[in-house]
Length: 260
Image 1: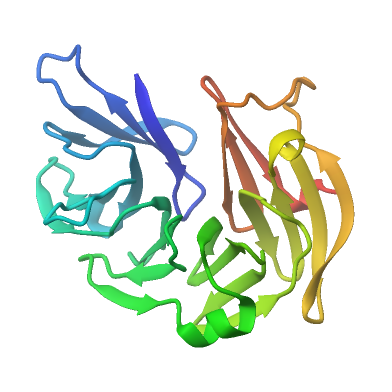
Image 2: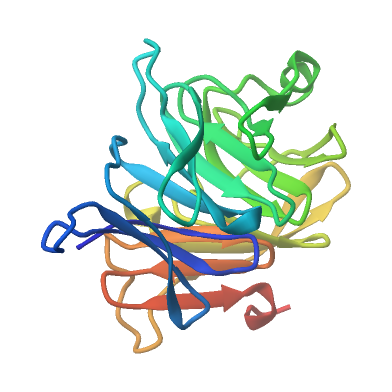
């Protein structure tokens, strides 16, 4: 049974599977490119609602979404043999975790925190600064996160700015599209997916123009056969692509596929 899924820095699908029926129970982490390979077998995963990301040297990071701030570690790095080699407390309300090819890890929360960057050994290196919150509004919920190379993009509740974090500097654009849950970005072109209620499958294309996002088209995202995206599907943004992961399939939509 698949427990969770996420997208790695090269656009690979990462998945966590329950191995309860195996001779040695535990969980199995797989990577799909699109062929499947086993990245690690973890005999005793203690984290609920996990997100997994690849790290250099065949290691994987597993982060649990919730934490009660006791000495509970909700981020664990495992080697290819399933042995824990580093542990840390990321805190409560982990909504997004994305690693880079060099092993940096970006974390976005839904509990009053902007993005945080940590190293591959789980040491905090950078935290969203107060000056950026003064410029672009307070962060009450990090709704989207897209890490492209060494650049992180995010969109926050309640003011919904599009924010770029590069080399420790923060640049922002005002945005009137509310409640998007995933974004794709390349240069000044951007697409925002999702929203509240009837806008759950909304797809807005636009450009970053001056100090704001200018929408150029609005669509409904559907599957290749024209069926609606299932409510239980997960949609992730990585670079210029949106990845749609359903119970049985994995689809990719590029900005290049949208009308210019």
